Amino acid sequence: MCEVCLNNITFAYGSEPVLENISLQVAAKDFLMIFGPNGAGKSTVLKIIAGILTPDRGEVLINGQVAKAARLGGLVSYVPQNYGKNTADFPITVSEVVELGLIAGTRQKRQPKKVVKHIVEHMLELVQASDLRDRRIGELSGGQQQRVMVAMALAGNPGLLLLDEPTSGIDYAASQRIYELLGTLNKNLGITVIMVSHDIEKAAAWATNVACINRGLCFLGNSQEFRATHSQGRHMWY
Image (cartoon, rainbow, N blue to C red; front, side, top):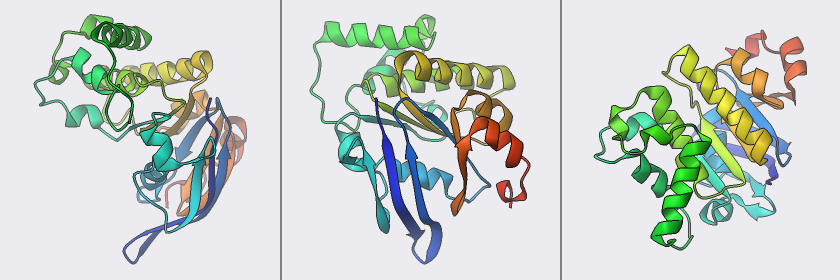
């Protein structure tokens, strides 16, 4: 279980302001979907929560820890946009990709081989990709790659899962399976999920809460409120 608090986050790339005074709380076991137009700062927010970027002002606390410490301690897993596609040329199997999630970006000690194998198999079962274990990552479809990336992110047993446009560039059926997978993981395992998406209808159907960001925080509420008052708003796209 993982609670996330953003307090007055402000960030700029050089002289270009990106985020201004964003404050929000994400309760443990929540599924927050972040929407907004291109260039609104959505991916930047996710990187700040992950502790990859440091805000110019404000702070992020994850279960009371600063963001970077939480990620390095294994509490947070972050899946960047198109991460599966970026690894497609690596001569590495699906099982080896998932195994990387046990050590990448954390201070966790290496596990015995039998334990590692068990964890990898369990993660692949969770995302319904056991039959892909010996395939090269580059041989998989976009939807299959994304499921493997989620398995890798889960391997370290995080309390918070961050995903940046995990359905970008994959077809409708595959993207629907990704949303269903994340919704099931959130409900059944109690993992807190924060996800950036452009797919308002499918994403909001699974999210418990929705944030709209366009430099500042335009909206924060549940999915029903979002559909009723903001899903067609001009600030979503301009």
